[in-house]
Length: 617
Image (cartoon, rainbow, N blue to C red; front, side):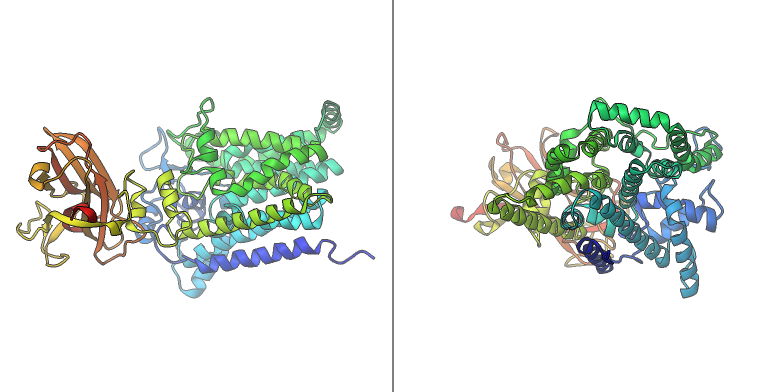
């Protein structure tokens, strides 16, 4: 009698992982934040905007409603998601992003629209019910993709191996971020699309049908409709089963024999991308249109090292467990070469394309988000590596070491996801110094956050130093005047401060000479100030410089907004720099605030201190 659930472990793991993902999403809802932490923000807004533009505002051509959405919900710093049609009438826009996700979201959009009306929310496309609907769309499509991947893996591997791969993939990589917290980005949908492509490809090669060929074509078209660079996916069905020259000849003969299937696959691909071609023709007059402006690929100069290993966004640095599927290509090649060849070809081609994008760090993300969708294909060598470790005869010590290492790397991955959601891991500007400053750190200090911007810090722990005041600028002796930015509306200890805004990019400087202050080369000077802002002092910097004859000899700055900042209260920001080794007595030290293209804030108590070691007091 056939068991009711022939593969119970992987099925149970799939369901438990989905429950965990839903629970994690509920821990960080952000449905109604009216800022960039919401769901439909940044690039996700660009993928989504087709729906409210067409169905609510009936203004896909001009998107005049976007200004109101930007004021109400603040989804991004600017409305970059659409731009002026080149050569078109003023005010006519074309979206930057393709419409594949909008098609997948359509039923969820209408669900959110109905709930918004039922519960009394604004039916404007961006109120909380729409955000919730799209967030759970990502989770459901993620469940679909994992379910399809499970079926693919079970074709070649045991239930236990499949279970372990699903658990490690979800909990041990940055897939978790894009299936749960950033579920409105394209990656979880593309992952599910690749899982569907693999499943359809396996089925067609086991039993070729015209419907199967058409379905493969439609899936390829959908992947391209979501993200045009996913055209690399075509190598998966093309090379599937080609593990030798003889297999390649047999594959060629099969395609010739079933040429109607090939035509149907091509037709499916064209039908898949047709909606975007029709939109581009309607908006610009051209069936093909490049909507990314001055952002391009540099195929002859790919950023391979940075994509794989950099502290900024290195794939294997932030997802080290992904070394396992790379190693698993070897046992997969030995056991299922007809599977290993297309997976390897796809991985290398996709890595080249991803690395060739000029903005290789792909904006705000944890690790390399552009590679997340490739994990569906990499799950096969991942499973091969796990199966190799579980084979009888392997040394127990090796298995124990593998289990311990896997647990540690899963723990590291989940902890770094927590850090990312807490803004401890910076979404765009990580570097080596800051990475190690916050590694395994739940409560970074101001000195830790400074490592994002400066290369130096006190040689020893701060407790070994005492500050010797050199000077302070508290704005009390200056009259309040809008022309100078001095205001009497707010102050740290009094009612006066400096208001940093667009009209006052450079704040008043605390100025002193090395000779007058008794400073020597190599000594550490601490620059500090108090900062107050309603919604964050974004873009503002505290600067310290040394000048000689009007020319800068040293210039260092740190941001005034970090994870320690609290809105609507005074926050102290400071950092320490050594004076140049060639500093001279007449050199001038300046401490001031720079506010170019920054949000408004109030500044008080601009101060400089000599950080004097205890032994020198």
